[in-house]
Image (cartoon, rainbow, N blue to C red; front, side, top):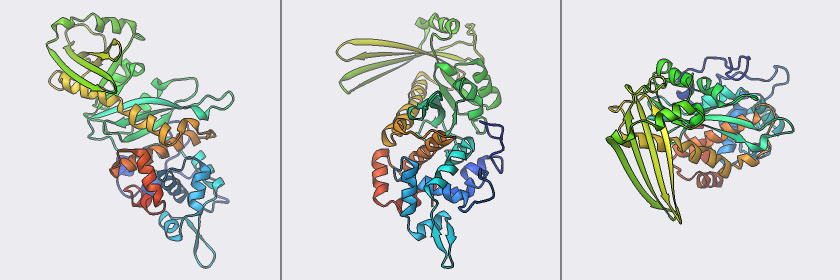
Length: 380
């Protein structure tokens, strides 16, 4: 069953083997073809592979994808599985309308899982949401997408948050298919929920590090009034750059015997940042985690907190600047979330190939648009 609807969208259950083992074409066969049987001419997997390849070269729209397909050489279309026509076995690319229809109707949850990175064994996993602003249409709000990314900058999966609800309702559904044993999941203050903590520790055998703000007044007050003067475990970090000086102080305090009312809470953390530009400012953030002092020193906690911002800097910002996601007017069906998944897949492939600058990676790939995309690990 799809995690976003009541329809069956996967031929097979998306196990870890379906997500990480074998060529991409084989993994995509686990998805159900959403089209009716009558009138189908182009193989479902071939259309998706063409879309993946075109987006890796920088295609931002269905028109750009169809133009890439129309100019593709015969050997490229053959490798991607395009259909043959005439007695001469000429490969025929799908039209723009066919590409649009397939992407619009394909299961978004299954596609995101099968194109994403496997999080098993990673150190941290950050969750954060982003709205595709250009997908707003009339009274229909913009698609809001909750994504998960490893601390190394590899996108795992994403889900579209249903209308009239928020990210909280999608937290467990987003993470449920994955092996998270030993992984530390980070989230902003919205996800500092007791149910989320129990789900991660009791069900997924994972850890959590959640930010605490004033939206949970009682718990925030408990953390703020802890005896921080007794915290012997501290970590200092000073950085200078971009015309400012920042001093970060991370203090960790064991709270198992201090009456903090939160499931499995082992440590509370106070993260204080002093920033000096023309004037000096101070920001204090509280974090609660189930990691004990033996599992996570203040220095490691500082690393975990920095890793949470990777998803903002290396996914959401990159998709908007390199692919102009917020300006995209793609809005029908599952198109907004599936196009976002294709962009995340392209970012993963470029990072896996050693590109640290995604915009530069897209330009490099576009110089040989029918050679370099298929040389990437996910498409060869």
